[in-house]
Length: 357
Image 1 (cartoon, rainbow, N blue to C red):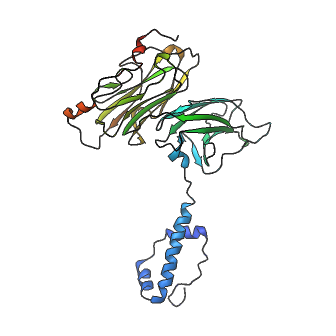
Image 2: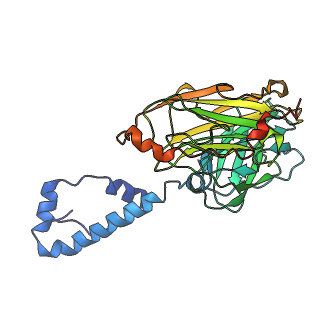
Image 3: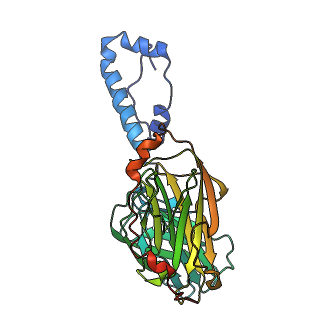
């Protein structure tokens, strides 16, 4: 600075601009600059520099397109780069198989089991043709079975896409990629959404008990408050392969303040000898709610012998959560608009003989 003015050498690096954009300029300096007309150009130049600095700094922040348009992976860290390519070495780790649900819901979840030949240090998960991936550390490298928890966006960009999975070892060698092609099943998200996804072709039932005690499940699929079981999969082993159930409250439904209880029942084992892994998630206004008991999301499994052909009040309690409704309670008489004759499509077959074992 010479003669009380500012120099005109603006050779400032990108990082310098980022720091400059965060610097507070004293008011008296700004006042001195404004007093002279010949500094108008300098002021305009500084404004341009600050704009460029802010724009440039934003590029340093990794934009997670997968989170907004596809999914997140529990425990994973997003990497804003291409999915690592296969190393092609005989020493590369090997994925024996992967198993997940090919049907997905907006706002839902998916358990993906990864079976490895030997221990892995981390799992790589991404979407075919989309830049970016998740790096998921493996807490026990000696474990050859890894369960990934995928939570899908409520605004999926595509109706179907390919999930890419790979593993890497301590030498950063990358396995051959494995893929799962997934397809979106139409389901409501709404104000409140509770969903369940599982990985075997069995009849698993989702139950939600409202604060008033009313239970939403296959036999009462619409509540007086407007809660709807809009996806009911594999009823009584009539296999549709969707392996998802979903309860939703749309924008016209009544969200009561109080405690909600989520249960999952293993209704029927449909000739499957393996365990059934499942995930339950609950969202309110698009965000995962905080569980007051259990966890959200909740991860569990059923063994074949646990099937009980359960009804109201049955099943394993998964979680409870509280909601404080942000809008005023609707008078009881207005709830009548949600009371519809129940159409038990395929629900009566639940009372038939047990097709499983």
